Length: 281
Image 1 (cartoon, one colour):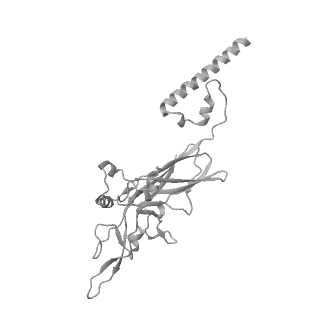
Image 2 (tube, one colour; image 1 turned 60 degrees about the vertical axis):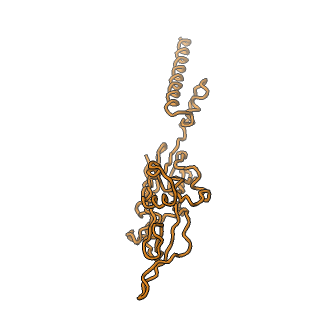
Image 3 (tube, rainbow, N blue to C red; image 1 turned 45 degrees about the vertical axis):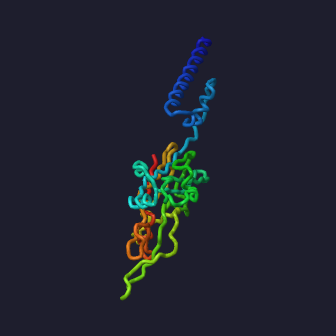
């Protein structure tokens, strides 16, 4: 009786391992390789000769940056006039080049920082040397995986979200009209070169009424994600339009990005207006 019971247990163990092995083959076929497997699952399977019991895997939380911002048609036309060559498909897929840093705080108080960089690497005036802009030539980083027990995820405090301005931007000073001379604009120094520009949040009064529109609406900032479940996917989505002003008037070089330095409302909106939405599930 004892011998039959031992044989039954052995057959049961072999069946259980066979089921695990079959499931692993199906899973590998579905995901395309071991890289996608939970490490504890791989350890459990081992080399196929033993079956053990393990504590639950610590798990992970996935963080994604989704860049759904667009580029203004007038700006694209200006860059094409400067020599930027785009297919129709590439034109549709243009996205502002964005970089931002995210702080992850874990339940035990430790932290880690992730810098996301995403967007079109070819969105720049072709007359400029792209090697001068290393963040345009590096690989995108739009997702990351951190261990579980995340207490809070947020845009790194006292840091900035930056968008790349892909062409020269000329500043002008307005000279008021007199009895003899009509109002005219005079260039104020050399043009500002292509560069990353910090996005600013709307200026508001104590009652949170908007005083000056900047790049990010006060109520559409990237809100912190608190205590996401293990296995959650946290998505930070950016929408909006990369846009530069084109000043018109006497003395202005027509068709080039430019603005009047006295026009604070226009300057505040450079390089566009963007919203952020944070979700996790």
